[in-house]
Amino acid sequence: MVRSDLCCNGLRRRCNAREGINILDPAMANPVIVLDYDPHWPGLFQSLRKRVAGALGDMATAIEHVGSTAVPDLAAKPIIDIDVLLACETMLPAAIERLASLGYIHRGNLGIPEREAFLAPANDPPHHLYVCPKDAKIYGDLKIALAERFREDRSAYNTAKGEFVVELTSRAIVIQKK
Image 1 (cartoon, one colour):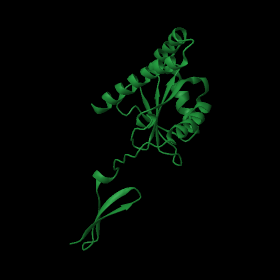
Image 2 (image 1 turned 120 degrees about the horizontal axis):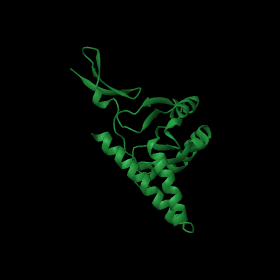
Image 3 (image 1 turned 90 degrees about the horizontal axis):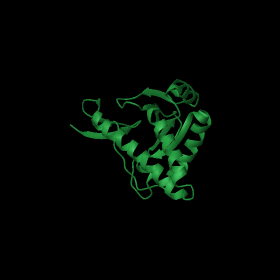
Image 4 (image 1 turned 180 degrees about the horizontal axis):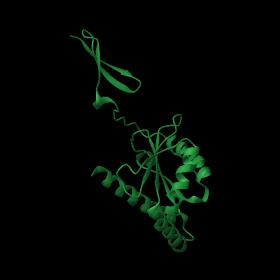
């Protein structure tokens, strides 16, 4: 009996040449691929951000590049992670509708409360889009306080603001692992 692994449409199949049977190997259906940092990732995020921001307008208080691709020189899976913070939780249905007009498919919270996941449009570069309504008010209040505190120090403002996004992302990762 001869076996070989063939990659077909992103799925790995085990082939038994003598029996002519293809059995989908679920462990290999979505292999983990980690690449060296790509300096094009921030630009890719910016192009995706611009389109999402155009659709959501002032409904979004922030659209942030999160995850490993947002960290310079860090190896990562080549998938851009984007968090959108809504100004108000009641805006979620309208946000879902506007994102659908761009081709995003709402997937629900996927087991993580206070976060809504979206499947990217078919022809887009690989990315994850998450809308977080609950923490948007907290984030907005934080930005106002930080603007007063760091009015003359944009770098400190951005660093302090980024700490909240990192904390929010860390909480989501912990919840996801449960």
